[in-house]
Amino acid sequence: MPSISLFPRRSKRLIIFLLLAVFCFLGVYTWNWRTGALDTFAERSGMEIVIWTGTPLLWAREKIQGVWKRYIYLVALRQENDRLRAKVTDLHLQLSRLHEDAAEVSRLRALHSFQPPEEWRIEGGRVVSYRFGPHAVVESMLVDKGIAANVHTNTPVITSQGVVGRVLRSSANLSQVLMITDPNSRISAIGRDNRTQGILVGQGPGDFLHMLYVPLNDILEEGEVLVTSGLDGIFPKGLPLARVERIIRSSVSLFQTVYAVPLADLRNLEEVLLVSNVSQPVVE
Picture 1 (cartoon, one colour):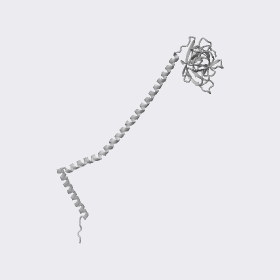
Picture 2 (cartoon, rainbow, N blue to C red):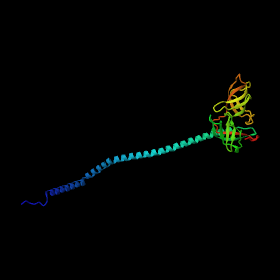
Picture 3 (cartoon, rainbow, N blue to C red):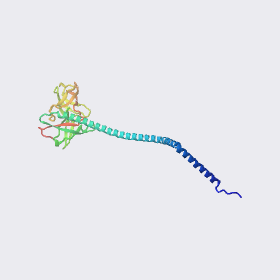
Picture 4 (cartoon, rainbow, N blue to C red):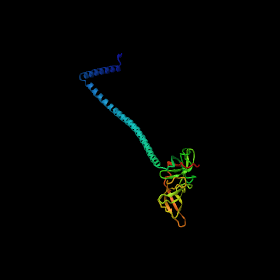
């Protein structure tokens, strides 16, 4: 009859393996306890593992921090550039306003330097709008002074350079000014140097002024300044009107053909002077 083992063969092998493992563990433990070799190996290997795993993480952290700092720097730099750009724009606007103010002061100073005769009174006005060109009914402009400022029909309008025209009609606070270039404008004129008289007539936009009724034998020179004679009863005597540009003397006419250009810059007016004769009754 076969014998029956109390422990199966596999269990015996397991028990033997466990006993060998415990024996080896105790042996290694005892050896490590005496020499400390395993502890030293574990310490050094652990440090190497930490270094090898920590270095990439540290590099990644530095890169991320660098990118973030550069982003923050660029955002701050862009904000600073925007602020400086806005400041430069504001300074340019201020400089433009200062130039405009200086130009206005220069113009007003030149207007203020005009001294009319004792019986004439001056009133400053600003140009509101123009009506120029071949499709306009008349060569005219609007000024922000009217009857409320004692500005009436035929009130002369001038600048420091010369005559602009006269008031054609006026309302309470506005006046329409007929320019000297309009064909309906006629002003009694006289040469400043040779005292030759005539009638200065407008010929429309972009054309010369004509001085009519200048006798053929009277002396008038190119470049001579024409001034108001005061004989028309509208303009005070001696206001600069135009400069003679060209003279044609014909053998078949009793009069000279005289071309002149206005002294006032009629296309770029912003402020004007309205000159009223306080000794004459108002005619509307």
